[in-house]
Image 1 (cartoon, rainbow over the protein chains, first blue to last red):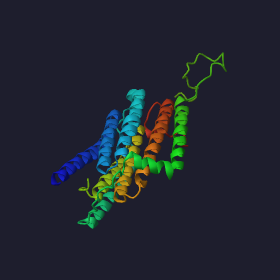
Image 2: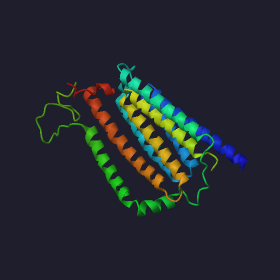
Image 3: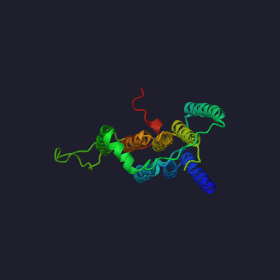
Image 4: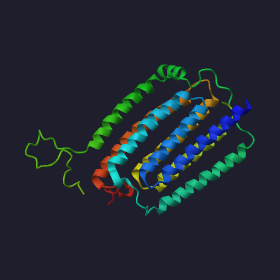
Length: 195
Length: 103
């Protein structure tokens, strides 16, 4: 039992390193591809913490949706933009720099106060009941009590896909409507917005 | 799996939220801004799952996290489409170039 605790602590420490190191790397990297890799590291760390919290189903969903879909989407867009996706050195950010410093100091102060108050009063978890966090229990709750939000989130995803396609596609000239249109390619922009 | 107390998870989640907030305020690259939003959503999800581990009689926190993940995926898709549309107009992804409505 004692060695299990050590294993858990090591697992938690590694996951924490992944989460926070990946987060800092995401925010600090100049190259957006490196930011995406930092985001991936952070997401894998969070999935590890879900495993520690006996949320196995959510850990799998986290890897599938975030690492498999969201990060890949980011990387597609970065590749599509090419070198212009790189961040130049940031100038003219004085106000938000002060704002960020303020947010950092305020939350660090709050965290220190909370840490001092909780000292010696850590909340230990009781052993999880059998089947907690398994897909069977979650599926039962999802398809009985929470059926309406589940269906609505399906509709939301459909609308998001249609909206993403509509926004990313831009204005296109339909060759069947304007047969004598000037020789513009299928992705040509109207003259006034091409800058 | 009970040796790590709840507060450790909450501290990690708060630190991750802080990293995301500072990144959102400091960076000017639209792609990094979207990634910072994803970091903040992840930290909130971690808090929800950790509290659900305390109150094990239902899975409300985990189901809420499930919906947050679905909405985050939709948000990333639409946000990246907006970044692409913005890039087509201004040939850059810097957020302070988005000033067409400034007089």
